[in-house]
Structures are given as C-alpha cells and as structure tokens.
View 1 (cartoon, one colour):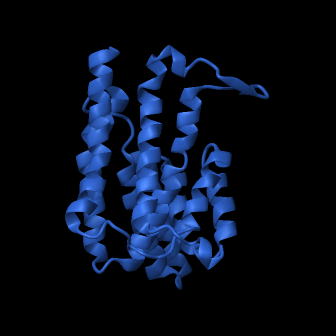
View 2 (cartoon, one colour; view 1 turned 90 degrees about the vertical axis):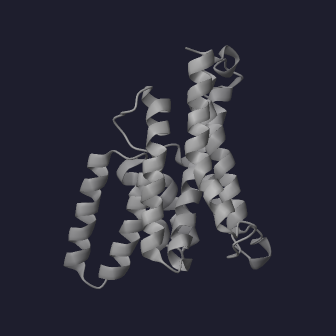
Length: 236
C-alpha cells in the first residue's frame, strides 16, 4: 500500500480489534437470546442475514489484527522473555471468565485466545532461533503444535499457524492476506482485517504507558465476565 494510506498507528489497530472482538462476543453470547437478532433481515443467495451473523462476521476482523500486533510486539519489545511471560499470565487471568461465559463453569474444554497468542509468540521465537537448522525447527514446531492441540486454545492450530505466517510474510502483504484469510473460518470476512493491517504506519500511537497497555489487556477478561453476568442474570 502506498505510504500516503499508511495512517493507522498500532494503538488504532488495537482499538479496531478490541471493538470488533467485543461486538463478536456480544453477538455470540447475547444475541441468540434476542428474537430480533436472529430474525432474517434479508438474504444473499441461500444465506439468511441476521444481526447475529453480521456481528459475528465483524468479529472475524479482530483475530488477524491481534496476530499482526503480536508480531510487531515481538519485533519491538526490549525484553522478549518478559513479553512472553505477560502473555501467559494474562492467559491464566482470562481463563476463568472464558470458562464461565462458554461453559457456565470454572472448567471448560478449550482455552482462551491469550493461550493462542502465547503459543504463536513461542512459534516466532522458535522460527527465529532455528530457521537455519531445519531439523531443530521442524521438531520444535511439531512439539508446539502438539501442545496447541492438547490445550485446545481458541482458533487452535490455525491460530498459531496464522501468527507465524504473518511474521514470516510481513514483506509480502498480498500473499500474507490471501493465505492468512484462507486459514480461518469465514475467509471473506477475515480478509477485511488485512486492510487496516496494511494501513499501519509503524508508530505506537496513543497507548504509550504501562497502565493504558494493561487496561487494553484486561478488557478481554473483564468484558467476558460482564457478558457472563448479563447472560446469567437476564437470560437464564
């Protein structure tokens, strides 16, 4: 994309992803209880378009942007070990709200998306450390994908693969967008995530201090908890 169109900072991308994610989760967990949200508005071919479906499609934009921001975090962080530990800690913090909103219990069969981001970060580390050693790289990736499969983290193996793909193909945005979208469900919706990604100007933006950064992290578990409370109180 031409430089004049690169107008979005990392903070704006993170905000776009955050809003799309919240819309997606409200759509997934609250809209099915509202009759107007599941009533068809119009049809496209054989597909009936509802407010629920629209919100879920908007939500497909969030994950690829978060994956891209993770690869930027890897490139620019001054302490990769600390970065990885923070991802893991937020994965743990988010697990109870994730379990409650998806299963209504403290234990659920799959894990939240922070685990996917954490595994993707490790995948990038393995790639950069072993990219000149095919055997070590292959063995480390196989091990990582086994862990991902056993954890059953959100987006699964495809999510980890997408993070690594975005990192490896960062200099080839068209191929990155095409293959990245094809990896995910609803690729025709996910592809729209790569429009703002390619409008990224390389600047951090307004999220500069630790307090603001961690607030953005904490919104994930907090909004899941709020959704669970709303569903429990009003719809069950």
